[in-house]
Image 1 (spheres, rainbow, N blue to C red):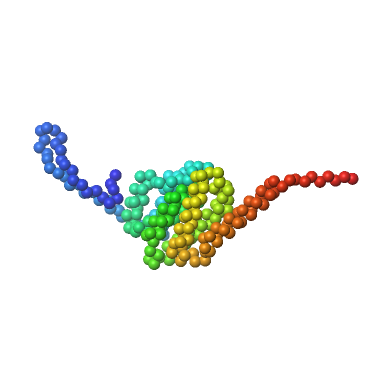
Image 2 (cartoon, rainbow, N blue to C red; image 1 turned 120 degrees about the horizontal axis):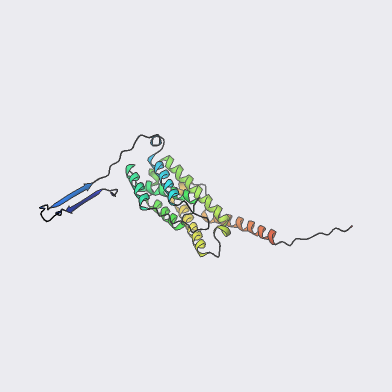
Length: 237
């Protein structure tokens, strides 16, 4: 397997038999070059968008059998998947910022269908925040990032609304995931990029309090209905 950056190494020549006089060193240089074909997909989509679709397909392939009662997936890809993504990133000349943005968007969308460990998602957010230079983003990239933040936040509120089911209080692993989810939200709300692309959002503590109050009120009503004694009315003639 040729590394993405190529291969440059010296090898000592060894004789194949005792009578051979072969000796010396061999300098082996291998480089990988690619050319992008003018396919219809390439004409319709940017390299960044194609890379996101490629990553999402690989996520579907590598994490196909997730069950709701299983622990969240770590997000780690196989060596072969990483190689494919590295080759394509080199082909489209990806910057660190583009790579961080695409990874966050692909993994967070995948998380809606098959749970990804929130610790891993938090790492992606931190990497995005460190590399993101908002003033160099195109308008399309700004809109895509803003839409992605909103999708993730709305999905988090939905889970928090059902937190007694999504994060059972007697399950330490689930509670840890709840903590990490809140840390992901805190990270998003504190990012300058989020404040620019989503300026109409409330402060985080306000949104959390609203969701928790609504969830608690609904849960209380359900419990009252469930345990309310049934009164039998006898009608005498």
